[in-house]
Structures are given as C-alpha cells and as structure tokens.
Amino acid sequence: MATSTGMEIIALEEHYWDPVITDTFAGPNSSRRGELLDRLYDVRDLRIKEMDEAGIDIQVLSHGAPSAQRLDAQTGPAIAREANDILHTTVKAHPDRFAAFAALATAHPESAADELERCVKDLGFKGAMIHGLTNGKFCDGEEYWPIFARAEALDVPIYLHPGYPHPDVIAAYYEDYLGKFPALATAGWGYTVETATQAIRMVLSGVFDAHPKLQMILGHMGETLPFLLWRVNSALSRVENIQTRSFREIFEAHFHVTTSGNFSNPALLCTVQEMGIDRIMFSVDYPFVENKPGVEWAEQLNFSREDREKILSGNVRKLLKL
Ligand code: ZN
Image (cartoon, rainbow, N blue to C red; front, side, top):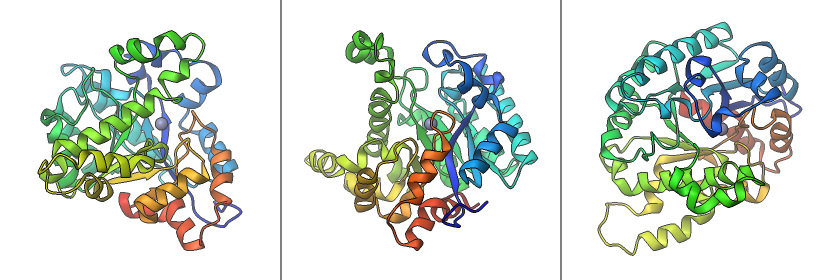
C-alpha cells in the first residue's frame, strides 16, 4: 500500500474491542455508542477498508482502554489469555496487515509476566499495552516490576496508554465540568495528566536502573513530557543522589513517543528537539481518531525523506522487530 509519498506506513496505537474483555467494563468507558462501537468491534473488512483508504499498511492492534486493567487478580489472567488468543487469530487472518500488543491482567503481576512471555514467544506479539491505573494504582510500584523484568528479558516494549483518572482525582479536579465537557476527564486533559504522571513515577521508581534495557512507549506525542522535559528535569534534579542518572537521561534512554491523536507540527518539532528523530513513531489512535487526517498530516511534514521514513515505519520496524 503506497501513499502519495510512496512510503510504507505503520501505526501502533490502534485499538479494537473484544466482548471477552468489554463485558467486564463498567463506568465511563462502557458508554461508547454507534459508529465508534462498530469500528471498535471490527477487526476485518471495515478496518482494512479504512486502512486502505488512508494508506496505512500495518496496524499494531491493542485492546482499547481500560483493557485488562480493571480486572481482578483471580479472574483477570484467564480473561486476558482468552482475549490474547482471539487477537492472535485476528492477526493470523491478515498477517501482512496486523500485528499485536498483548492485554495483561496487571492485577496479578506474576501471571501477567508469564502471559507476556507466552504472547511474545508463542503468539508472535510485539509487546504489551497497559491502560492507566490497575484498580486505582499506578504500575511503577515494585509489585509490578515482574512485568517489566520480563519485557526487558524478552526485548519487547510496554506501551503506557491513558486510562480514566482515579475517582478522587475526578471528584477534586473535573467533576463540576463533566456534564458539559466530559472529555475534560479523558482526551481533553485528564488522560494526559494520568499518563504523564505514570511515566514520571516510573522514572523516579528506579525500575530503569534495575532493568537498564527496558523500553517504554508513550502516545499523544509523549503526553506533554517532551515539552516539559527541561523543567521537570531541572526541578527533580534538585534532589541529590536519588538515582544514578538524571531524569532527562533516563527518559531519553527508555521512552519512545508516538503521534497518536496529536497531529501538531509545533508539538512534533519540540519532540524531535528533545527526543531525537529515532524515538518518534507515527500512530493514529484509530478508531477514536480517523486515519485519513493523520496520514495527510504525516505526508505534509517538511522533513527529509530519510527522517519521514523513520517516523512512518523505520523506527517502529526496528523497535518491534517487524
Ligand atoms: Zn489510544
């Protein structure tokens, strides 16, 4: 599939829903309706048609938020396993168009680590995606490190995706505006705060000293962190000897960024300046965002052919070993 630039395009924050997992959803993420639902539940004709129309060659599929993060430790592992097996069947039906990130029941970290290994070794998955809080907790706590240890050993990245904010945060920060502006708690702001906080906490936790080869991915042009990197680094570096490397050094060595749902030239230029061209990868956030505007934006980027190729497919091919 060649676009007007003639370049291959791979997108890696592209979601679907499976009733095996969504039947367990309750609350804000269960209220999706209409055409969006049709697209979320389709992993065949409609999806591929819309990929073709936009010129997207490959989608790396991931279950949509909150995915397996609200499952409990007892029932979660079996549900995630079943969903991953079904996703494997989806990819096998169109191996030239789809790849996959695993859903992990993070409430049971040891079994989530085992499931990641099964998905990578037996099913050919390319990593995993974690959606926000695990039943109210960020995943930088040491009880979750078995997952990151296994990702490092398997040499696959973990994608930190937004999830709905903590109920106390909703009540304190957003609630009075949600009637009129429900997206304030999600893509309008709340998702960003949650996910940037999760990434910052991971840097501070020491998990990257314990697992020096671990690689993470952030969507939405890095959830504001490239823009704030100087200030965050400056403020957190005032504490002496908290770790062997500065915040900046750790962030730049362990995080990759995608363009999902944030097709902004100024944001991209800032991200290139802070992260370098080799850590930026094209994504859409389908079906919450349409494919075409993303591809049209990527095609007008006034970068060298070599750099555009890296963003559109080269960097992700390297990171995910596609
Ligand atoms: Zn997304």
